[in-house]
Length: 318
Ligand code: BTN
Image (tube, rainbow, N blue to C red; front, side, top):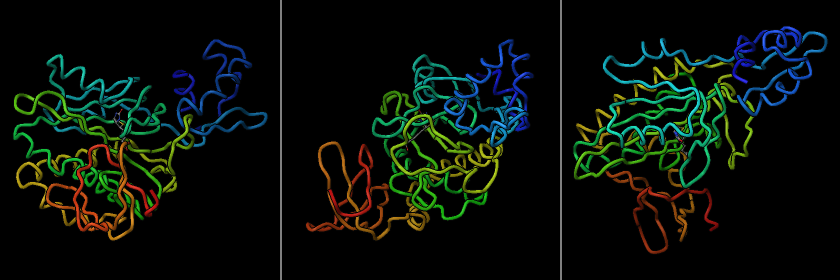
């Protein structure tokens, strides 16, 4: 599959004969692989009668050399072709005592979303990143972290020109009502001793089709901006904003980001239902506090809720 993708990556038309010759397979074999391609890379493919095949959008494979030039000197970057999950991989390495800062992959075979969901991770078309953040100030350093990371993603996408962008508590990034990016934080180690947060970020970049069912409306940067988007450029802007926001969070706390976060919150003042595995509560969104907890005005008055495994839905039906 990878060889086939490398041939088609330029977005030009390639004949079945040419592909077959390069891969050492028959034209029928080429056709079989072509049919599996959308599920593998999330790209549409056109079959042009009498000429050959062409990807609907060109594909830019991650260039390790270029990525290194985008990362601040001293940061240790790992670029993988295929991995179960960049977060899982980072956690394994941290447990072995490895020093690393950033893991990116072309593809995840078991990409993880929040609340045990799958994160659709086809080859070469999206950004899958884990950023490792050492915890030096205990619990205090984690307050508002998940919301702050969502804000960093927001800022990066806004800079690329995405409009109708908004946040949904705790850290979904949406375009209109369609999800474009998600954040999954995982703690490794003991807060009283040495620990790290693995900040997992997934951004739909050029994905056009998904092989697995995505249980909510989604979009990609390519669709929103109307063309191909470079993952290298996106990563550079994301790392810039992430670095800036994490530094601010560490020195001044979440309070200094709270107002900006609330301005970006799409569901501010709306009737919502907040649910966990065991209960759900309906109320009106009253904003967030200095720890990033969500305020809900319910029949019993104002209560604040920590993100944890909670999820938010529009409307008051439970
Ligand atoms: C969500 O459910 O919104 C969170 C999605 C997080 C996906 C990213 S992709 C990189 C990292 N590795 C994973 O397995 N998940 C996160």
